[in-house]
Structures are given as structure tokens and as C-alpha cells.
Length: 271
Length: 274
Image (cartoon, rainbow over the protein chains, first blue to last red):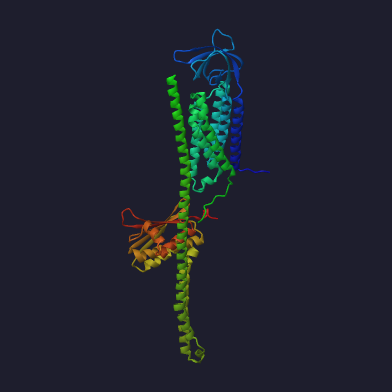
């Protein structure tokens, strides 16, 4: 029978984090090609500020705020949805942010992977804070409770926001930014503790150092991207998402180092 | 539209430099930790080396002291007991039976006196090795005894007061503490030109504290550490190595009025030992 101590559990949680990231990447890649809704643009008008307001006739699927809309001649992001008063039930007004000067009435398709992104962020936050929990467990009862409390609170907020209020297709920079700041803070606390442990001087010889470094580098590197990502237009988004891919590669390389590292009984070597 | 484009380029600018800044900070932090840890390791190794060096010095000092002690005992036996017994032997020759009765009695009396003297000498040697008062009656009596002997000379005033010595320490520990007090007292007598020594004992939590006050020229902790690291100060090194054995501590300090010197010995009590 396999016997794990908590440090090996740490590797297992990290492994689950990698698997969940990878699965959501694959799923969102396949979902990004399939429209989540389609229909026809009935009319389009430009308001005094320059925003384009279109009336959508949704024939299949659903349309949400924050989704990418595409017609044969133009594309953009739906910023706001309103239900018209004297129209049919499946008709909606949408304010669109687009680089095109106008949008012609035509058939449209909407695409979004934000639901998967939101679910993957929940999984990521749970696994990441579990990693911190497993590390802080050795430091005392209070330290270990903080990541657990964070998991519970953040998950509750996630459930309320995404399932009860129903914003699964909307991206919240505030929520994700806050979680990222929390993760970065925990990583800094981890490093601070490592510095204050003279009995374990070879910090870089332990897998948890590389796991936390990986998480810190990825989260710090993509912090601004996820904070301001939804203010960019579609082409810029595609350009800037290379940052995410690069940091994702760095993160996985560091995870690989952690996994390949054999845990040694650490003692101060003599000359 | 222009406003929108300026806004977008601002975001791109912020995003690019923000990400770069975060990356630099994170990598900087990780590198700092790695280098800091290396520095700590180097420092620890240096400390270990210094400690082993110090231990070597202490060991050398204790071996030297042991050798000196052996030489002293050898000298005492050879120079004092040897000639005394040889003289006694001279009185008790085979020729004794041919001598007159009065002369026989005189010879036997002389031999008896010499043997008594030898017994006293051997007793003194043995007492200096292990004072019987210490073994039988404990540290308090042994130190009181020792101080009484010094007081007997008349030129010096030594006194001691034990406040909390109800349960005796282990025999080996008592001997070590006694030796340390003996060594400190000898040092004060030899080097400090003091006119009095006052010893007090009290308990502090699970430690016993023995404090010696004197009005001579003493040393401070700094001097003690310096002497311990140098090649001189054999007695002080011995005090240190003895204290190490019983996990004790010593502190040399000068009184705030600068008129007295204090030496405090802190010894853990027996109950924390196996």
C-alpha cells in the first residue's frame, strides 16, 4: 500500500492543478470554434458617443454580456445587453465595442469561453490554496486555517456570482485580480517563512519552492493581462494572449523541475 | 474613435510594462532568496568551523589540565610520600631487633610518626581530588568548608550564603560546580587583589544560580570570551568546558557602580535530564 506524507500530497495536488489547467485549455480551444448562440442583426444604430447599438434576433443558443460577436463583415464584443420593451421575446439590444465603423444587418454568431475560464479559475484557486494549506500545515494551526478559510470564502463568492446571480459568461477583473493578489501574497509569505528557517538552508532543493515559484511567476506575469484583458479588442487580445502562453510554459517547466526533484534528507554539508 | 484608440494603446502600454515589472520583481525575489540562502549556508559553515575550533581549544585545555593534575599528584607522591616512606623504612631495618629496647622504641615511635605524616599527606591528596565533605554533605557544606579554610589564613574575607539549596544536584554536577567555584575563587585570590569574596546561591525557575562578588580587578564577559579564544587562560577554558558538560552558563560582569565584579553561574537542575 502506498503511504504518502503531506509533502508528497503536495505533489499530487500540484499534479491535479496541472491536469485541470490542461483540460480547461483543451476544452476552451474546442469551444472557441463553436458558437454559443446565433441569429440575425435586425437593425444597427450609432449613438451620440459613438457606441454601436444593435438589435439582435436570437434564433439559437444564448447571448451574454462580454461575448465575442461576429458577422460576415465585422466583429466586436458585446458590452451591454438590454431587453427591448415592445419587441419579441427573443430580441435583445446590444451595445457593441468594435473597431468597424458600422455594423450591417446580417446573420451573426457569438463565441465565448468565459464560462470555462471562470470554472478553471475556481479549480485553480482551490488547488493553489490547497498547496499553500499543505505547506502551512507544518507551521501551526492558524497558518493552516487561513488558506482553508480563503478557499471556502472565495468558492462561496464564486458560487454566488456565477451560479446564483448568473454571471458565468461574464469576466470579473475585480474578483480574479483579488484572487491573484491573494495568491501572490501567500507565495510571498511562503518565501518569507523559507527565509526564516535556518534548519532548511537549501530552499531550492525542495519541490515546494519550485511549485510556489511556478505559481508566483505565472500569476505575477499574467496579473495585468487578466486585469485589463477585457478592455482590449479582439485582435489585441489575441496578440497579448501570447504572454499567457509564455508564462504558462514557464509555469509548467518549473512544475516539471519540482516533479523531477527527489526529496533529500537535508543536512548542512561539511566542507 | 480616436479616444477609443488612445485608451486602448494606453492599456497596451500599461499591460506590457506592468507585466515586465511584475516579472522583474518576481525573478528578483526568487534570485534574492536563492542567493540569501547560499549566504546563510556559508555563514553556518563558518560558524560550525569556529565552533569546532573552539571545541578543540577546550578539549586541549582540559587534556592539559588533566596532565597537570596528574603531574601534581605524581610529584606529591614522589617528592613527599616517597621520601617519608623511605625514611620510615630506614627506621624499621632488620637490625632493629639487635638494638637496645629504648632505641627500639624510639625507632618505632619515629617510624610511626612518619607513617602518620604520610597518611595525612595521602589524605590531603585524596581530599584535593575529591573532597569528602562534598560527597557526604553536599555542595553547600563543601563550599563552606573550602571558604573556612581560606578564612583561616586571616588575610582574606570569604563567605557564602545558600538560599534555596534544599535538594542536592547530582553528585557529578555538584563536583563540577564545586570545581568551577574553586577555580574562580583561586583566580580571584591570585589575580584580582580583592579583599573579600561573597558567594550567594538561589534558584531561578528550573536553574540554580551561583553568584560570586568581589571587590578586586575582575574580568568582563568580553575579556572571558577573548581569553577563551586565545591560547592563554587555561583555567577559564576549563570552566567553559566543564559548564558545557552540565549545559550551564557563565556571565562575567562589572557592577553598575564599577566597584564590584560579579560572576554568575547558571546550572540547570537535575529534573530536566535523563
